[in-house]
Image 1 (cartoon, rainbow, N blue to C red):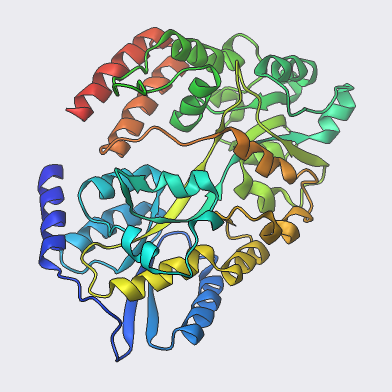
Image 2 (tube, one colour):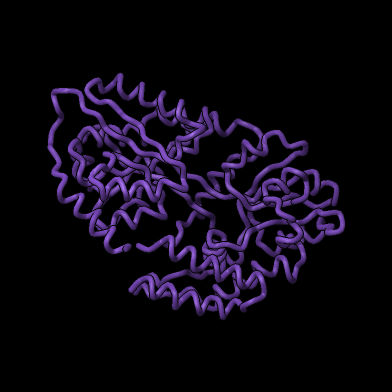
Length: 413
């Protein structure tokens, strides 16, 4: 079925022949997004109003779907010959669409546009949406994961606050002084799941794939050790709550209720924690042998079969690189534009809490993107299930990662 869908998607591209050049009559560009709804549709409308005032011959028609439905609806639209001209892709799903020839190569319009400068983007974000020798998307936003900490709990225990040079040994040592399981207070939370595992692997000098020949290295000694350390936060160090200890509460809710001294989570939680009844701040996440932090990015790509490639280019350029767009994003808290000029973020940096917002940009020095393959979701699910079995004591870390190697290799065949 997956191969059939892939063939249908490619056929849809072949049948749609682009018309080159700006049309004299108004052109409608259909834009499909998951991140705007429901909270930022007014912000998107504001961007569109500015764009359309500057481009009176182009009208942007927005279509949305929630995250859970988006990745089913988008391939259905493409296969049915109803593909949007421009659509949003996160990095993890980008390769699937790029590998099937569904995305327009933006190298040509970028080269022909004297007003375009790729240097305005954060380099890591711009490079993330290259496939082969082609630029198949422009980065729209980025987010990262930080170490959030409860100052009140640290103060009560007489423990110094986290520092940017902390290792996980430092974090665990502090967590042991704060943890009081009988009172439901825990030193830290860092979930045992795919997204944390790939990062902890990098923090321990490991990788999912060999950088030279692409062979699967997910069961390397460094990776096994990283997984053992992750599970050890619960089973050996006793500083992280188990699922039973959490009793159905999310880590965010536990942090907000003052039950977690440190929590590894994303900058998207700033607004959720803004009204906490305790003092909190952030720091760059610790590492094992080296630092490595999440780098999540969303891009906008142009459908390879669009009949309006030049108008679509104008929209993706404005939506990802304009000053007006960056200002609206900062003011609304709708993620952060993937732009290199920190002047755009001056208003963002002075917002509190947290006081140490500069740490968000400090963390980018150590950013790593997730490992990706064409059958990305299947790999994430397979690895996630095996990590869960280690967490439940049903497999050792070595057994689980040996099995993960076999399953990933099967997905690559």
